Length: 183
Image 1 (cartoon, rainbow, N blue to C red):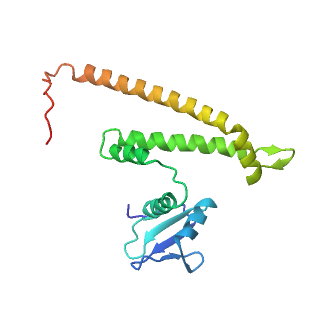
Image 2 (cartoon, one colour; image 1 turned 135 degrees about the horizontal axis):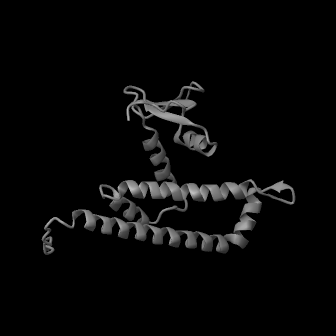
Image 3 (cartoon, helix red, strand yellow; image 1 turned 90 degrees about the vertical axis):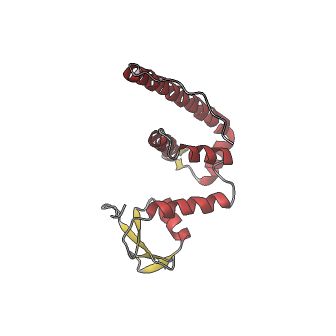
């Protein structure tokens, strides 16, 4: 992508020396500052100062990499390997959409709880900790049920696509080739 987002409120330029310049505050910022913009739900775009190429995704991925390297990682090696396997696969686009919709569903659930109050007070971080200690297993069960249902729907959709492919291409004489050993 060579153009910037039209509705982004904030423009951050990345210079060849790898420094980030926030045009709104007219100052240099760090990845930690960019992470804070994300946490504050600020709209922004990061562009290469020379070419104007959109670098927002690569900066966000860099933040995720740093988060994964420090503290408790969100993704296991197995999950990361599975994600890598989908690149270049026919299902790549569908997998991206599937992950995006599931993260959005999780975010919507969290937003509903965040908007909740207890005894007239909004949920504080301490209340969230207490809530999750008690309700965590139930929430995990709900998420597991949701994942199982999603998996079932995904398998059904895959079977339907295979059946449709057989119907469409059934008239062509395909000869199965025996698997070859790769050495």
